[in-house]
Image (cartoon, rainbow, N blue to C red; front, top):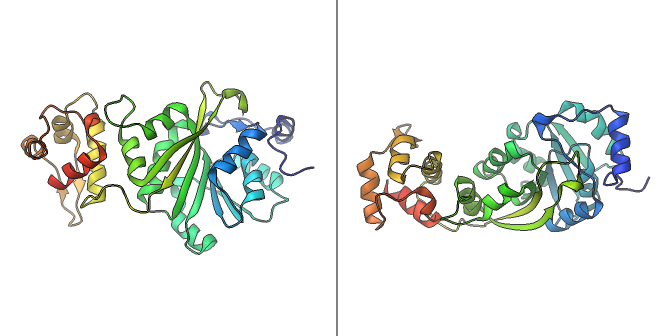
Length: 294
């Protein structure tokens, strides 16, 4: 059989029937069945024979086969134990793939990068289900995983949220986090017909190229994100109300910091901003300044 072969729906169906595989809705399983899309994702991820790639959620190994053809080494992390025997079968011809049966949020990716890539940055490629996109993206960035880029397929609305600016309904904590750590760029739209089973909405491939240095400097990065999370935790409230009710930060000294409404008002006054401003009106630079003032 010509490698890679799983982008062909005929072979995907054969594999699923052979193992009597039942799709798990809780894992958001939708497998790609379009060879052109698969090739394009590998191309947009910039995968070369120099690279160690971590794939999150390989499924039955469709994109894994394409990655294995292009990369030096692939580490595929799959949470569903029912897929492990299938992956052992579909990836049996590749000696540069390691499959790990684990929740990606529990994998020590820093250690993995050290073992597999001498601590050099890895590239992340993934087809992420909607419900887990934000925790995975935030986990990869906040845990300082050595990575150069993340190329992921997500629901279109999630990709839109990652790249929008202030003053829009999609702007939020995810937008700010992604833009603090990386440069987001939408590279591909993928219609439902390219998947098995077909999802109810279209998907988007977005590439997040990690900044060498964040575009803004905050005195305390963790505090900055505590402010951002609190600001968007109650979207309909003013920033002052949201921070008074929702901001809680454990400083390095072990003390828990909260803020009063007056402290927020004082900071906003120094920034020449209205007391009634909402979080979605602030830029990343303004959030960094606010965090330093509180």
